[in-house]
Amino acid sequence: MQSVPSTGAVANPARGSAAAMDSWHNSLAENKLPSAGCFKAVYPSAVWQRIGCVVPPRIWFPMPRSRHPKLGQTVGDGNDFTADVTPHVISMAIGAFPQVKGVTSVQSGGRTDAYSLQLNSNFFTTAACGSLSDCVGWSQFVYENPPGASQGSLFIQDWLVATNPSGFSNCPPGKGWENLGIGCVQNSPFGVNLPNVNVTDLGDIIETGNADSSGDSIYMSVGTTEYGMKNVQGDGITDLSEHWQGAEFNILGDGGGDQANFNSGSKITVSIQADDGVKKKPACPANSGTTGETNNLFFVKGPAKAPKLRYPSIEFTMASQAKGKATCATAKGK
Image 1 (tube, rainbow, N blue to C red):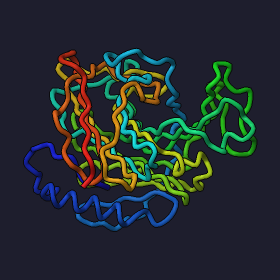
Image 2: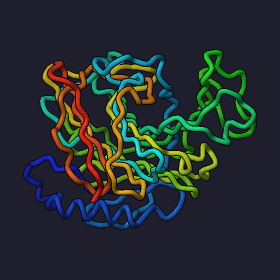
Image 3: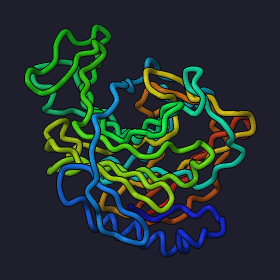
Image 4: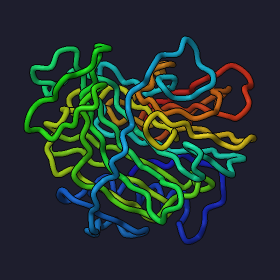
């Protein structure tokens, strides 16, 4: 789906060279999903093949409970770096882990190998709120990796978030919303099952979210296979394609505000690209995350310089041991 951040590793011959994989992802990006539904492509083919869809799991990934005064432990619950392109609008965002060191295990809610990957939007004003006051929209592109299962789930979760502590007493009628008090939520009608991804393989993952007036899409690449799902509903769910200006991506707990707990010695660098049609560097504000899930890592000193990728991007690093001042590097697009 995009330029792949370089890890400096020798390419697996089955995957092709880094340049060949980069070309493959770009071809898939240009050859968008042909219609609503679920699809798969296997390297080196850039042709989408329709596959069966599933119903997404009823797991909610709510907004933060609080805001943190400074970066530190714990990552998440509003405490995160994001790629901010304001005043421009993002059509596609891409999350990856270009450097993963020392990661051998993760637990969420006491469950081994449970985690979520979340590519989240900023909060924004949306007509979808209807007559609700103190209401903003929010969209999440989610991969949920459950424990003890052979398959994970790739889907989109949309929210109407209550900005007033009293929450909502109801939701817009006839629109598929479920009222959780703190907000109204609905999953995409479709989801894609894919093989569970061991946390030791984070470096092989690329997650992509696309916002379009004809329907939002989510993609995930695991090695030489790319999975994709286009929402059957139009963009009228939250009008994300008109308002997406900030993108958060991270590995976090498996829903419900859970925390992903990594082993000691873990160190992960996060890359976020944001296609806003403009090549200049994005901003990288701290404490601008939007999800309520967390992990147990510290923000630490990251790369001195972010690599120049296809789209404007940011890079930052998290580790199990606090060391140095937390930094975030930015780069303009090619």
